[in-house]
Length: 349
Image 1 (cartoon, rainbow, N blue to C red):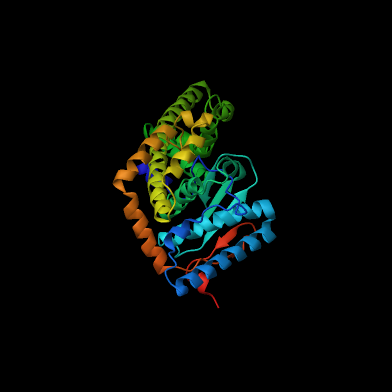
Image 2 (cartoon, rainbow, N blue to C red):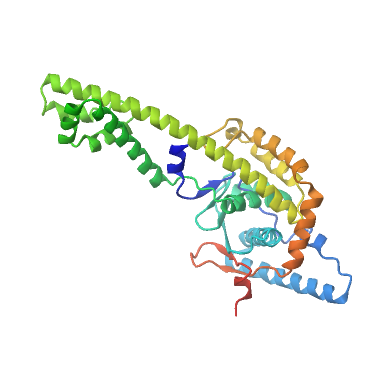
C-alpha cells in the first residue's frame, strides 16, 4: 500500500446517493426528537416548548436567508444535522451545510466539515426524513473517519512523481543513456510524453535535431520503456486507490447508519435511499470511487444484527438527555453555507 499512503492527502468524499430534496418543514412531518421527549412534568413540558420555539425561529431565519423553498431545505437539513451531532457526540465541532442548485442525485463531504447536497437528491427523497438522515449520516462519517480522497492537484503531483521514477529506472539501466537524458532534461520531457498516453512524439521531436540515427533509436527505445514502466505504476496506483475508496464508502455507510439510528430515525431510510440510487445507470457498475449499490445494500442489511436498533436508540437517548439544547446556527463566513454551531459555539455570549 506504499502508493496508497502517498495518495492520502486532500478531502472530498461523495456518497453517490446524495441529491435528495429534503422534506419541507411546512409539512407536519413527525419530529424524531418527539420520541426522546416525554413531558411527565411541567418543567419538561416547558423545556420542550422552548425547544420548539427555537426550531420555529430557525425555520423563519432560513426562509429569510434563502427564500421559502430553499429555506425549507436548509431548515430540514439543519434539524437532521444538529440532531445527529447531539445524539452522537459530534457537536464538538461546527458543521456547514450547502445546497447545490443542480439536479444531480448526489451529495458529498468536502473542505472542513462541509456537507453538500444537490437539489436532485433532495427532490427524490423529499418528505422522507429517514432517507435524508441516512445521507447526512454517511457524509458526516466521511469527515469523522477522516476519509481523504486525493485532490486533483495532489494526484497530478503523484503521477508526475511516478513518471520521474520511470525515467530514473530507465536511466539506471544504462549510465551512458542517463547522460544523454540529463543533457536533454528528459525528466521534464518524459512527463509530457507520458501524459499523452500514446503517440506523443515529444522526445522524438527533440531528439531529431540533436542526435544521429543510432542515438535517436536508443532514446526512442528509452521513451517506450518509460511509458511501459509508468503504465504499470499507474495501474497499480489506480487499483489501490479504488480499493481504498470502496473501503471508505462501506465504512461511511456503517458509521452513518449508526449515527442516524441513534438520533431516532428509522433504519429503513437507508434502504429507501438506495432504492433511488439503484435506479441510476451508474449504480450498476463499480467505479473507481464507489462499490456496486447492490453490494452496499447487502452490507447495510447486515448492520441491524451487528448494531441492534434498540441499543443504538438507547445510546442516542442518553446523549440527547446530556445535550438537550438545540445547536445554534448562522451564515458561515464563507458567505455560501449555513453553519451549525458546535456545543461550545452554541453557548456564546
